[in-house]
Length: 159
Image 1 (cartoon, rainbow, N blue to C red):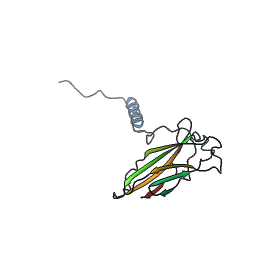
Image 2: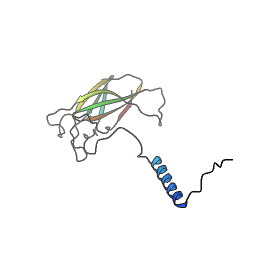
Image 3: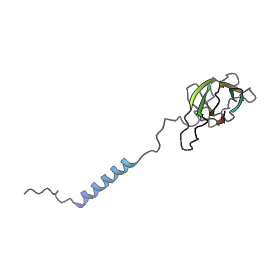
Image 4: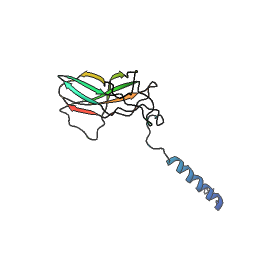
């Protein structure tokens, strides 16, 4: 009968084998966290809009905001602004755990002369809205390279 058991392992070889197995397990279990799209380094994004406001006349919404000035953390001036909207029928229940999925509905170029200077008239975006919906709007600034800022404040209402 042939013996299928391995030959006796020397203690030093056993320790080396255990260390190698431990390192392999640690490498396999190690991760870098949540995966997402690549982000530019801090300071390479345009500043975010913080004063998004709205008004409604008949069935038209008017969003307005000012061009945010550059800061130490956001040194790139805005070249334009993307407008995003979430629309949900009013009869549907709000779901606190459900994701809010925005769709881009507009693009407003920034005025080049005096961009980011205080006292300029606000930028405006208008759109027709439908009765019987809950709306949420947000704006993101973007620079000449297409890099977007963080989300603006949200405006939300039931119409």
